[in-house]
Amino acid sequence: MPSSTVEDYIKRLYTEQQQAPGELVPMGRLADAMAVVPGTVTTMIKALADSGLVEYEPRAGVRLTAGGERLALHVLRRHRLVELFLVRTLGLDWSEVHDEAEELEHAISEKVLDRIDALLGHPTVDPHGSPIPRANGEVAREETLTLAASHAGRSYRIARVADSESQFLQYAERHGLVPGAQIDVENTDEAAEAVSVRIAGRGQCTLGMSAARRIFLASV
Amino acid sequence: MPSSTVEDYIKRLYTEQQQAPGELVPMGRLADAMAVVPGTVTTMIKALADSGLVEYEPRAGVRLTAGGERLALHVLRRHRLVELFLVRTLGLDWSEVHDEAEELEHAISEKVLDRIDALLGHPTVDPHGSPIPRANGEVAREETLTLAASHAGRSYRIARVADSESQFLQYAERHGLVPGAQIDVENTDEAAEAVSVRIAGRGQCTLGMSAARRIFLASV
DNA sequence: TCTTTCTTTTTGACACTTCAAAATAACGTG
DNA sequence: CACGTTATTTTGAAGTGTCAAAAAGAAAGA
Image (cartoon, rainbow over the protein chains, first blue to last red):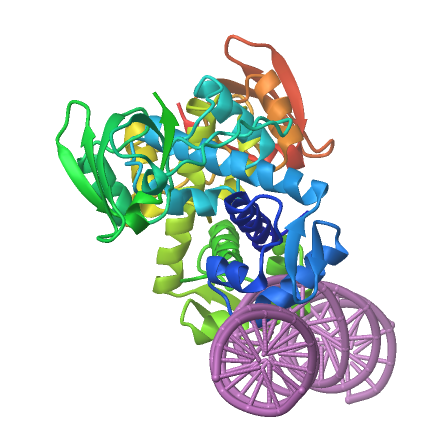
C-alpha cells in the first residue's frame, strides 16, 4: 500500500506533468509543489523509481510510469469526489474544500468512495470543473486554454478554475468566474499584464496575468 | 497537534479505563489493545506522560489526565459521528463502519464534523448505541450491565453492543440483538457458559458468555 | 525465603520522511 | 574555454513509531 506521502508525490507529479505533457518534470519544480527542499525530492523520487511508479533520469527530471499514472488517477478520483461531496452534501464552499479533501483522500476506502460516487449520481466534474477520473482510470482531457492566452473580442465558457488558494477562489466566486459562466474577453494588455473580461449576467472585471492563468476556457 | 497514533493510544486508554474505572491500565493490556509489543507501549506512554496526556506509574500502569480525557472524548466524538454518518447517509452496514471510522476520524476537520453533526440532527448515540460525546466534552454515562451478568427471568432493553468484530455484529443483527430491542433472559447457565434470550418480535437464541459480555443492557 | 513465572523496561535497530549544508554537475555568457 | 550561476545530489542528522531480544522487577507458589 502506498503511504499518503507517496500518493501526494505521485498526484503532484501528475498535475505538474499536465502543464507540459511529454516532458520530464524537473526536481526543483516538484520540490516547490510539495513544499520540501530539493534534496528530499531526490531521495523520494529514487524510492518511487525503485517501486516502479516513476522513471527517473538523474539531473534531468522524472515522469510517471503507466503504473504511476494509474495511481495518480486513483488519488485524483478520490480527491475530486470528496471535494464535490463536501460542497453538495455538506454545503461547504468551493473555496475551502481543497484542503479538507487533501486529508480525506488518504483515509477513505473504496467502498465509501463508491457510495459517495453513487450518492452524487456518478458525477463527471468536481466543483472547480476538473474532470473526475472513472474508477477504471479513464479521464476526460482537460482544457488547456487559459484566460491569459485568450483572444480579445472573443467569447468563451469557463471550463475550470485551478483549485489553489482559497482567497483566489473566493474572489472568483464573488465575480461570477465559475465553471459554466459565459465570458467575453474585452481586452488583453500584455504590457500591463492584465486581462479585462465581461461576465454574462454579472459585471466586468480585470485580472492580472497570473490570476488569468488559473482560469481555463472552452469555446462557447 | 497530536498525531493519529497518539490519538489512537489515548482513545484506547479511555475505553480500557472504562472497563475498570478508577484503576490504572496495565501496560500489557494496552499493548494487546493496540496490537503492538509491550516495549512499544512503554516508549509511547513515556512520551504521552511528557506531554501531559497521561499519568504514568512505572511497573504499575497508566491513566489519563484531565487533558488526556478531553482528547479521548474529542476523538471518540469524531469516531462515533463518522460511524453514524456512514450508516445513515451512505447506507453502510453497522458491522462495517468501525474500521472505516478508525481511519476517517483522524482526517476530518472540526468544520466538516460540525456539518455532519448538523446533517444528522445532533445525534446522541452511534449505530452501536454508544453515546456521542458533545463538542464541549460532555458524555452520557454508558450502561455497565452486560447480558452475561443479567438475571434469568427478567426483561431488559439492549442499550449498546460493543463495536468490535464485524462478524459478531452481523450475527447480532441477524438475530435482532440491536440497540433498542426488548429481550427476556430465559436462562443463564454458568456451567455451560451460555445465556438464552428471547428477543421481542424475533426468535430465541443462545449466546456464549464472551459474546454476552459484549451486549449491554438497560432496565425496561 | 527461594525459585519460577509473568510483566515491564531497556537497548539497539530499522523504515520512513524530512532538513541543512556541502559537493557536484550542467548551463550560459563573456 | 573558463567562470560564475543555478539546479541537483550527497551526506549526516533528526523525529516518529515500531520490533526483537535481553535485562530487571514483581508476584506467587513450594
